[in-house]
Length: 435
Image (cartoon, rainbow, N blue to C red; front, side, top):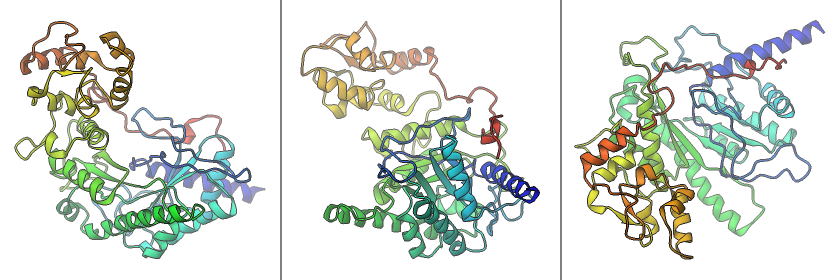
């Protein structure tokens, strides 16, 4: 009994170390895939995604989010787990990860797994261990919940392929927006090696879709697609450069998401920027807003920013900022404008635009109807007419609109003006938890 208790305490210590080490990776998306359990497996996953909970700093906690190991052969200057840092080190075994996932799932703590890793000895060794872990979960434990796993750059393509047939989503972090930035802060890593598995997964997903059209019961390869992450503010790229990289990743590699992580200085190094105001959280927020415009609103990076205007206006969201620079396109008549034109109106989202297009077929709309459809009138009122009328008299002038929008005290993201806590909530914050 004593030996068993000691082993359990060791596992808890590993979990404390490796869950904490994973908190800097924000790419934990879980939507986009259906997976039934066939009335015999454990767990399931539905396309709208599993139910999320969030910590105060916005990080997702619904998945068991861990590193397989925080040992690493690399010495990236921005990484807390770099080889030269004197931090507690730990590594799971595939069986230990399975025990944690199944145990936490049965206790209703989690509904899936987010598994990343440092590089243990070599990319091939690490990828093989990740594959073994997923194989045991899927084949031995029949776990059908959501799994997001990292593809390790430099690992054998066959290992990545086999793992892709077991995972729902895969991701490879670009780390930094440009090859120049990577060379400065992580010279052991090469951009081409990072892009190789991204290209492989994209090709595999395309081929798998064709196979599924011919053979409905063919195994699925990374059915929820792939994502990546970039650290923002560690190197000198402007917002325009970052957004161009994101746009390229969406168009060239068909990524589902690009994640942006505000740089947090966890190491002392002369090459790392000093941030007296803390991580650039508001800049991260604006990039996420612009990213949403790229993916759902039909905007291009060149419309939002240019070489002459390379950074976002921190006082306004990117859509409002664009509209103020293109007042010649407004006001828009909501009873006549097409769907894509409505999408460009500040205060009208893609869902409210869809509702407007459907509802106006049945009759005339008024401003009260628009409000019920989800239109944010305090923004939209400057840019629309409804039935040829303004909601109330407003001027279509940049200074006037800007002054009124700012007087409305636009809500900035949590922590942008307040002291921010960077501590990620953990499973151990629940006093009922015990191993």
